[in-house]
Length: 253
Picture (cartoon, rainbow, N blue to C red):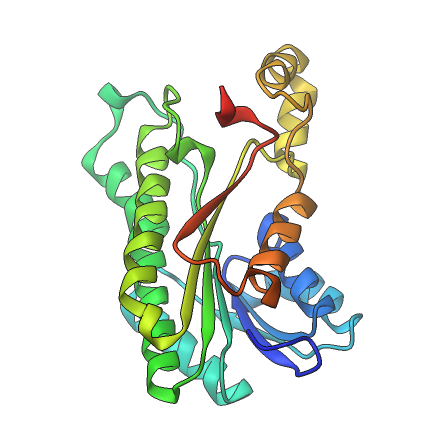
């Protein structure tokens, strides 16, 4: 996280579409070379194209955050390609919609393995790299307003995202002495293409959700990417351990 005159490197997980792809593109615009991950690298073609339009180098890496071997191999490959990594963005995640009384242990574990455990061990790899190389750097993890307020039928997801926010505080304290800044972003309902399609099929639900937001619009991928750009910049050099809510005022009630 040095100034924009020096090219830096970032690793963005789950970057084939949506928030991850938007963040990868904004970081490329901001002067980063960007490694992006997905379960299958052929899903990253469009994102890589957007990265290179900003004159940045892009690199696709296969990653399954449920596997420790995959997590370690991913970081090893990115360091081998770019020599160092200045910024990790933990975006890979899964959404679960199910009533508490119906969730099985396997379904609960599937959410935690990706959203919470995967984020923790990717962060661990990043912390080890930065400490070993004595580089200042940063981590940004994507949390959610579901981890701030209670919402029915998304308990496993919301609890995993609340865990990310607290993880952010814990890592920020432990790694402050190394100059590592740790952040999270908690978006409100984000109108991705798939979510827009579901809203188009159920406009009444869309309107009900919009009415709960003071700004009367949903979050966009660009809103989240702009927040990531800020947290990755020198403008946020004295900010750490925080979860930045990007929710149009939803959680202000």
